[in-house]
Amino acid sequence: MHDMGLDAYRFSISWSRVIPNGRGPVNPEGVQYYNNLITELKKYGIEPHVTLLHFDLPQSLEDEYSGLLSPKIVEDFTAYADVCFREFGDRVKYWITVNEPNIEPILGHDLGIFPPNHCSSSLAPSLGLNCSKGNSSVEPYIAGHNLLLSHASAVSLYRKKYQPNQGGYIGITLLGIWFEPATRLPDDIAAVNRALNFVIGW
Image (tube, rainbow, N blue to C red):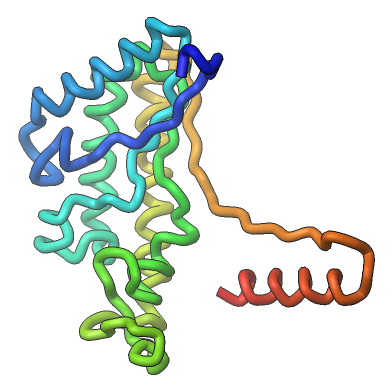
């Protein structure tokens, strides 16, 4: 990356690598792994941009209380974020709490193609999906709600406890899909409108 002239690198911290059971004891080897990575990036003038949750919720929390479907996730995510801010915040100035909370609930709790593979669509068999559990009418909204609450809690913690001394920034990443017509011909404009209607219809 240095040889290419890159000055920033976005990566995701694996919650399970830092806190193997999702809550409780911190894994010092996991922390050391990310410390080594961050230190090496900084050594070469590459600014780390860190995502805390990127479609990889610890399985133990899914098993214990259905993960994103429980409000318990807010407290556990905030405790995990606290560890990351404390351990890495002296060198990390750019934080992303959650990757695409507008997509993860759809893929995991509506279409069932991402963990925890929940869905209830009558179209599932024709799409090759296994809808043995879940409720596509309700679960995506609950999961999305809890992801946003988790984001808000972690941001509040960072701003109160860490930002004054560390001087970093914190936000969220949303998936935004957009299309533009290749030409101003009516067929190209109509194709873009169909594509946008399809995506927005998700």
